[in-house]
Length: 58
Image 1: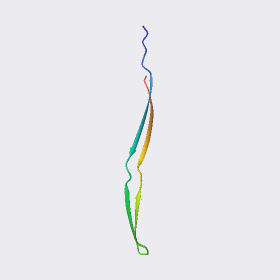
Image 2: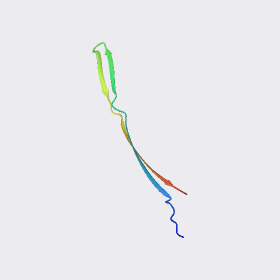
Image 3: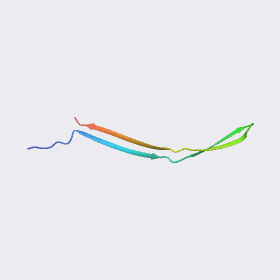
Image 4: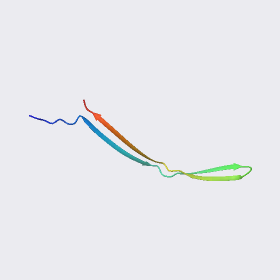
């Protein structure tokens, strides 16, 4: 009888994309020489993650 055994090594891959939006920060500064100054800053929070793995069964 010839039976085939499952593979001892398995591979896996995973992809993850995270997008946290584009928050806006409002900064205010006061100076006697210039007066009031305002700055709006936007930044993008997006990340890509790739994971690779290998399992070996004894």
